[in-house]
Image (tube, rainbow, N blue to C red; front, side, top):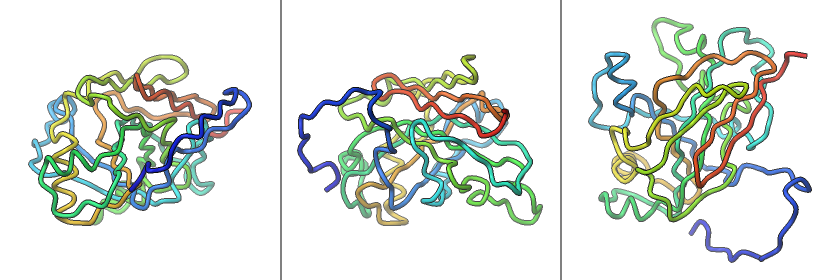
Length: 229
């Protein structure tokens, strides 16, 4: 079971350590169109089941890591601040109560997207490719337990200016149901991460910009986009 180890009690100064992603997921799953405000703005239909994609494990990035697009890519790179669910134990064909109980804790995710790759081939939307570049999945800085997900807000600042600020309570499919429905299609394992989708305000970043994803009780991801001198 994920999180079974006991804390050591050792304390270190924050500036003496480099934070790593608090989990290395076996599966890194993302959702699209899971917030009512964004669906209303775009005219997208309200989904009854999660609209999901996989991010490559190698997209994982640290809470203060650098976001570096591939050298071959010169298109737009979007930030997407999201609430992340961290699975705590094996979960298969679970009902909603069992699924909610299988969520170990909550974290913050920046689901970075190479926007121009998504529709690069009009015959095949490339969700996994657009989302899976190395470093396109900052996670952390902590996994918080005991939080009420519906009381949280996701806030994203770009160079200190708030660009996203939305309530998690606007989620179309809530965490327990997300996990339950996904578990009917794939076995979820301890350490898997599910990014719950984003809302309005996701915009492109430019080289040298600092993007900060903050969720009270979890902390702040602070990542710089490579380049810019």
